[in-house]
Amino acid sequence: MKKSILTLASALLVAFSASAQKVEFEEYDLDNGMHVILHQDNSAPVVITSVMYGVGGKDGNRKRTGFAHFFEHLLFEGTKNIGKGEWFKIVSSNGGRNNANTSQDRTYYYEIFPSNKLELGLWMESERLLHPIIKQQGVDTQNEVVKEEKRQGIRPYSNLVNEISKNIFKVHPYKDPNIGYMKDLDAATLEEFLAFNKKYYVPNNATLVVAGDIDFATTKKMIKDYFGPIPRGAEVVRTFPKEEPITKEFTAKAYDENIQIPAVVVAYRTPSFKTRDSKVLDMISTYLSGGKSSVLYKKMVDTKKMALAAQAVNLSQQDYGIYALFALPLGEVTLDALVKEMDEEILKIQTDLISERDFQKIQNQFENNYVNANSSVVGIAESLASYHVMYGNTNLINSEIEVYRSITREEIREVAKKYLNKNQRLILDYLPKKK
Image 1: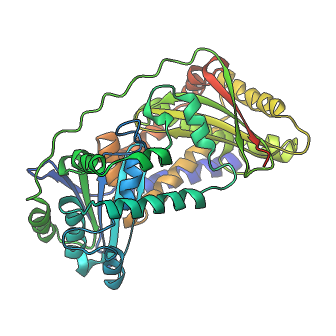
Image 2: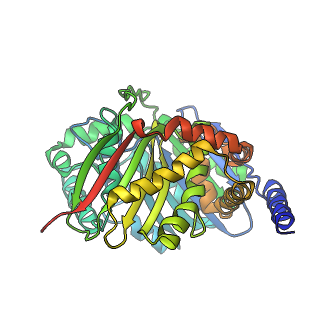
Image 3: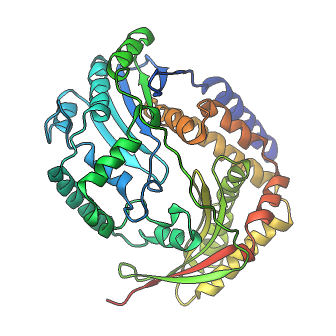
C-alpha cells in the first residue's frame, strides 16, 4: 500500500509540473548582438529588468584576479546621467529594489520595480552599459568595499571551496577565488579596469531579460530605443588551458583560524554542468545527503554518531565541476574514519543499484525543486538568463527536468564508477589554525 501511495503521489507531481510549469517566453537579438528574452506574467503589477553578462571570476589576466566581482560593485558607482551614490536612491524612491551577483562564469544585475516603472529599469541598465563612470576615485572606493566584504565574509569554513579549487585545478582559472586576491586589485591600474570594461561589458556579451507585467510591443520599442544605439564590441574569445586528468589520489592540508573542529573533504574533478553526467551527479548528491533521511546523514550523524555533519555536493560550473564529500567529526573520531565511512557508501553506489524507493524519492525531490524554481517571476527571470548565457539554450527552463526524469538507476551506478574513484581524487584536511 505504501508503495502504491508513493507511486500515485509521484505521478500526480509529474502531471502537475508538466501541465502547470511551462514557461512561455520570446527571444531575439538586437542588431548590436544583445540577446533579449521577454516573459509575460500579468498576475501582479511587477516587472524585473535584468542583464546577465558572460564574464566571471575565471575571466581576465591571472595577475589581476577578481575583476568581474570588483565590477559587480564598480558599475553601481554612477554613470554619465546617474550621479555618484544615486543609483540605489533612484531605485528605492521609485518603489524598487535591486542587486547583483557574480560567479566564476557570469555576472547578473537586476531591478524589481512596479510595472509602471519598466522604462526606468531599462534606462538604468542601458546607462550602466553605455555610460559607466570609471575613475580612480570610484576604483579606490570600491576597493575598500570589496576588502570590507571579504572581512565580513570570513566565517567558519567559508574558505573551504577556495581551498578545494586551488588544489583540484592546476591550470584552469577556477583555481583562483571568485573574489580574487587583494594584492591583484591593489596593483591594478585605472587603464586595466577601463580595458576590462571595454572587453566584457558590451551588448554582444550581454543578455537582457524583462519579465513580469509587460506588453510585448511596448517593451520591444523601449528596448530598441535604449539598447539599440549601443555599439557592438569585439567578440569575446576564450582559450582557457585544459586540465590533465587526475590519475592518482593526492592529499592537502589547509588551515583556518576561525574554526575549532577540523573537517575532511574528499573531492573529485567532474565535467561541465552542460553534460548529462553532471545531472546524474546531482542525483547522487541528493541520494547521499538530500535531507535528514539521506544516506550519509542517517548513517554518520544519526546511527553511528560519528559526525556532526556529513554532506555530498556537486559544485558544477561551465567548464569543469567539483564533486565533494564533506564531514565534521564528533568527539574523538578521526578524519580517516570519516573518509572510510563515506567511501563505503560510494562503493555501494558503484556496485549495486540504489533501491526503487530511494530512486523514486530523489526523483520527487527534483520534481519539487523544478516546481519551486519556476514559482516566481524573479526566479524565472534569472533562470531564463542563465540557461541562455551558460548553456546556450533558453528552453532548458522547460526541458531540463526531462533529462532528470530520464536518468536511470543504472546510469547512477555507471557515473559513480566513472568519476568517483580513489585514484581520481583529492583528500583535503581542513584544520584549525593556532592563533
